[in-house]
Image (cartoon, rainbow, N blue to C red; front, side):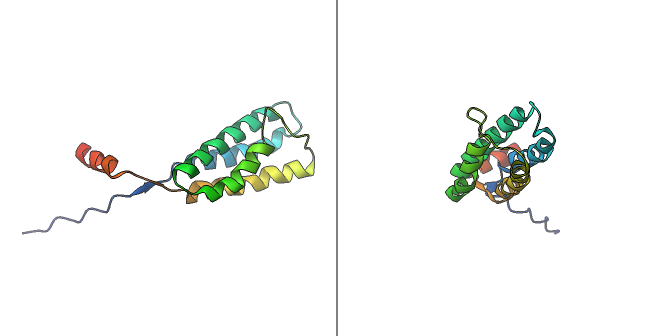
Length: 124
């Protein structure tokens, strides 16, 4: 009798910060074009909101040390009380801030509850 092929093990975690991390990096890179424009406030809003979302996923994944990187980004790109930054420093900050966003997206893992995995198996 032929043996059925082994099913791969189901993942016990997810990477919920990956999509917001990549999106934030894209916004930061594209935002370089708007640094001296009035549209730059939209970049502030997007980056701050995505940083808060990724921070929440870091808390869910109990990887609190990511907040050391994300909180300063939230403060610097804060659209409510914007800091009067301009010029080459702000340009460099835009490009450098994309790195921790992508790194956080890749490295933050949130455990998937066992009951959710069991429910997923029942659906198949």
